[in-house]
Image (tube, rainbow, N blue to C red; front, side, top):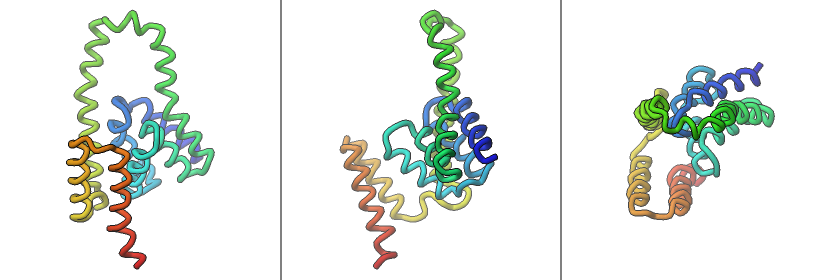
Length: 181
């Protein structure tokens, strides 16, 4: 039964998640945290962070992680395949006709209409991560300080891998070491 729930949840995410992983975050959060209650908002924020650090699309990485957390190895396989299935199917169907349709005014209109929706979905994902309903997210001043430093550093073109490593070190120093010592 859990495999079927995972399959249907991630199939919905795959079908209705236009605009890439960040645009899908609010959809993923709704399915995982709100609808099925497989995780809390804090755990979901951790999944987003881990999915950003690992290679590959965030939606596929989060599907693999959630599937594994909820139902083990086969759960990760089911969730990953089901989130990829709609895009794969559509690409196989559309590839044949793409060159004929790319200058079609209806196609251009549909794509132009999706752009503001994608921006809105990314904005919704940002708001969900900043101000989740269960009080997780940016809990204290340190979180905001680290966010500000990372934002300024990325604007100044600091190497993203260096930013990830330094952020991890800072997070361990601020949040983990005081609990151990």
